[in-house]
Amino acid sequence: MFVVQDIGMSSKGSSEPHGMDQAEQHPIQLSGTRDWQNAFLCLAEMRASGSQPTVEDYTAIIQSCEKQSQWHRALHLLTQMLEEGTEPDVSTYNAGINAIDHASHWRHAVRLLMEMQANDLQPDSSTYSAMVSICKRAKQWKQVLLLLADMERKEMQPDTSVYNAGVHACMQAQRWHHVQALLARIEDIGLRPDVTTYEMGISLCDKAGSWQQALNILAEMTYHGLQPGATAYNAAAHACGRAGHWAEALDLLTTMIGEGLHPAMASCNASLAACKKAHTWQQASALLASMSECGMHPDTSSYNESISAATKSMEWQQALSILSEMKNREALPDLISYNANICACMKARHWQLALQLLTKLKAEGLSPDVISYNASIHACAKAQHWEQPLRLLAEMTSEGVKPDVSSYNVSICTCVKTHQWQVALDLLADMQSRSLTPNPAAYNACVVACEMGDLWQKTLELLNEMEAHAVQPSPSTLEWITVVHVQRGQFQRATELFEQGSGESEEGSN
Image (cartoon, rainbow, N blue to C red; front, side, top):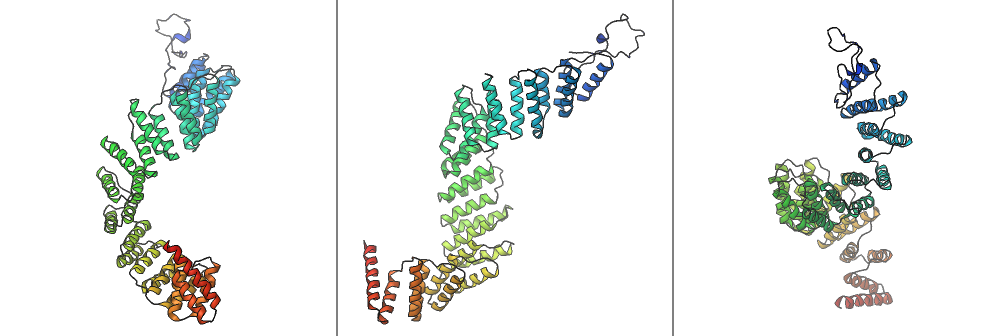
């Protein structure tokens, strides 16, 4: 404890001997002073009394600045010390570095470290720990790695918390190779990983797609008597979900809920996506219900994954039910929600429901895209309603949505199946005017349309186009084209086509 005396105080009535050392009168505490303003007042009184502050005095004042975010005053004091000829020691510099509380000022901390070394002062573990902390907050991962290397070079072993800060800095910068190296280093030098270390290791596995390793680390964590928290469970569940391992992901989420932990939205959504890929719509629906039961509010992505799971499993009624639930839960359906439901209705051949959903999404201020229209066109095509695809194609154009190859191919095939051969050929012409190339099914359908209209010249044109685009005619197409060549007296070409068709028939039978 350091004290100073107010020499301006009257000595009248005092029992102290005259001429007593002024430093022993009316103690003013510096050590442990928490209020930086009081600390500076003490410093002013010391100077007014003619007392020279010691290194310990300056250190105590700088520490008070550290506690109250007065980093600029701390750095000013360090400069004053040097100007007054008082050499700061390691503790003083450490207090100055710790006072730099904002990440954007990390360069000041680096300057202090360099100043220490220039003054032949050896930074200690506290110095490096503070430096690593501020550089981590400043996202200066390269500086962090240099500091860790410098510590090891000086045989100053960083502890687990310092390595954790390094791992965190590299994770922020997505430098996964360095993250992996630092985690391995912790193990190599015999340090015991703590909860934070394990959590970052599991997060690394999540980023790398190593779901099995994530589960191994989680098991190792428990084996060493450390209780996994929400961060560890969520990272592991997210890793399993992303990898499509829905059962493992759901087990982890169930364990979390059982232990009173809160699953993260991202890990739940990843698990729902895994259920979707595995066509396990029941599990997706159960997880969605569990999210609400444990106080979570599923977001639009949560509902969309569940709708898609039902759609992939041909459960159109479940998909529509989830869409209705979204509105009851105040989660706004988006275009993905509606598109998935339109696809569900299309697969179930409920073309009228598909068209109703298309109308509904527009009524709610959403703009249909090519997926919305194509799914609706497919739905109508399955029911062989050729007029509706034509209407939808026209609507797409008026809404500024460009029809693609699928839009036309399905419409052409539908028209041919319903004996609307002229419409099919018109669609083919419109398609080609947009520089879209029909698929084999559309080409073959148009050849059938030509047969219906007895358009042999158009048939030959289509055959030339198919050859130019390396599209293989179907056996029925080859049969009609062969007839056309016979009618025109081109027997050699007819024979070639006949043999070609016979060869394909034999390959198909084998």
